[in-house]
Length: 70
Image 1 (cartoon, rainbow, N blue to C red):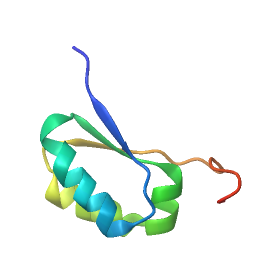
Image 2: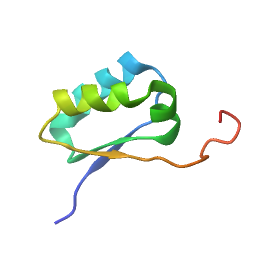
Image 3: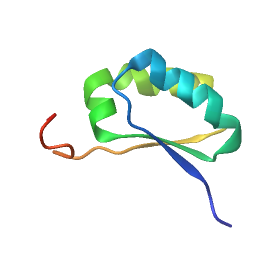
Image 4: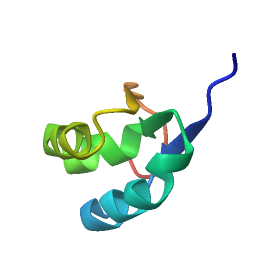
């Protein structure tokens, strides 16, 4: 069975949580993109995990992804 995934790539903490709130009921996996997790830190993961216990959360951590930003 295929799973659906939404990439959360915004650097705005509250905006990311708001977007996740809108899409979480419709997707299986919430992906926190590399720049997003580097900018917002583990606190974002903690908030999303608490708010969306039924979704898988994938944290996309790379050494470098968005070259100019990082």
